[in-house]
Length: 564
Image 1: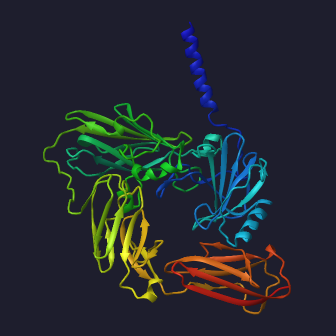
Image 2: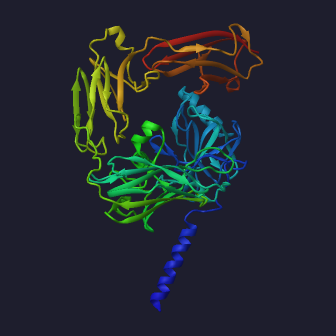
Image 3: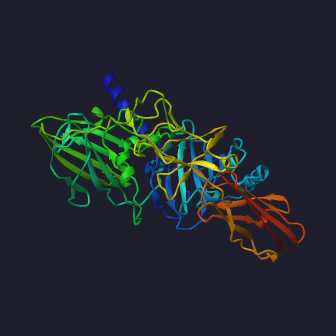
């Protein structure tokens, strides 16, 4: 009897905990318009999972953004990239909410952060941590306005919920935010992987696309395959919510083999530290080549993601000769809309199957060791565990351009590339920089450190690299006033800046030799100054703008304006 009562209490405790795990009615919506998503939590992004929900703002900036519960502002940051203008609010229930890409902050917060910007004489503030209770907020208070700060992005609000203690990010939908979604996920591609050296799929020992057929809105079937040994699968899938056309991420992927679950993951929660392992969840090489993300339904040994549950043999299927298998991949969105792909597999050992050819002509890399290689005055150095597995690395130098393999292998750490700079004249040394030149038309500046006769940079992307010379000044153009204009009727002073080579590093603007705050819109390449920031004394004023690029080229623009 006692045993039965204990068991009943245990079951009741479990279900009570499950129901109370995330409070459903504690947080309100951060917007006062119906929620339409352009990005879901856990969506696959470059080198990371999407850490929140992207809420559409009707293609415009300036919608009111509300605190979703009582709390206090625990962090504010203004940055050109990343989250742009962002507010973090800590709540007494143990969670922190995040509101990113704002165009401006709400009353009180806006003045607070502007005073810091003027004190630092910088648009970018770094992370600001107000004291607990210094800036209290109430549920429903306007804390900011939606925008597009933080890069080349469209207007939207990025919203997160985090565990305050662990900093783990949690799917906001688990807290009761409602999003209209009646559409089932779509499955667009199926990949098969022969994992073992003696394994094969359809007589091949390499990864391959397996044709699939859509039967109806929720069912797919692949062509029958023959296989032997250890194999795995991967799918390209997406979800649409409501009438939005965005291809959003799915919530969970499950794989069953003859009715038994072999693989499962969902995007309930994860930590920022593990997000980089997305490059082992997806077929990274396939993505780099075709820009199509295929999620594997098996786990690589080096993959430390915590999103997996109860894997059997890490999701790898050991196919036996003359055995039949029905593999079922089940994809769900958060609203439990479900699509299923069935894969009929016949076990057949084929002695004449094509074997995988491994190119061993390169430099042998043991993942757990430090490696350093030198060629033609160029050095590459890889710390221990830069690579997830042992490989043969292609390293070559031609006409001053360095090739460090192909950019199709994910790295866990940065490696260093060093060039001998003695061939450059002293007057040119300050104008050189290291660039990633995988795309010849758009070389990518790498932060370059100069030491005597060497220059070096670090990166996590393999590929091609060169030393480039930048002797061009940044461009300053299109002010919204002419020299000696009266600008009494203008609310903002605007001007554009750009740099086509090493890129803009910094800018400083002054009126009458006093620093002014000019906000920088990266997408529009536009600086803007709000005349309401401070009262100007007199009617004649001198505007000065100094812009520098990443190698120190500087351009200065000076103009006179009049204002009552």
